[in-house]
Amino acid sequence: MAKVFVHGGQCEKETIITARKSSPTECGLEFESTCEHIQELAEELKSVNAGSEMTLPLRALKSTARHPGTAAATRVSSRQQRSRQ
Image (cartoon, one colour):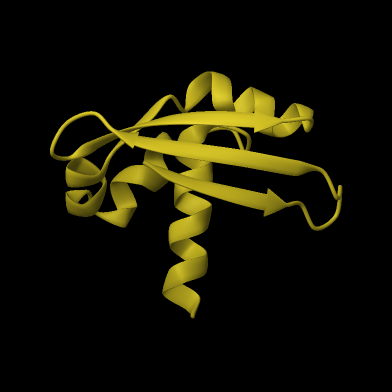
């Protein structure tokens, strides 16, 4: 199990994200937050399959990101930020 405490920059609301390994490549996610945007994300993002995320080309994720608040768009955004660093 891994637990992350996040202090939001602009909204200054705190979030606790807990990840628990549920299979060799998948982690279940739990979010505790007072931020309504994170609560919306938590409804969609219940787990992450690291195996499939690591093997998908970036272009495939971009085509699924139709709305900025969706989990797929969030993954695209974080990958784009990492590639710029």
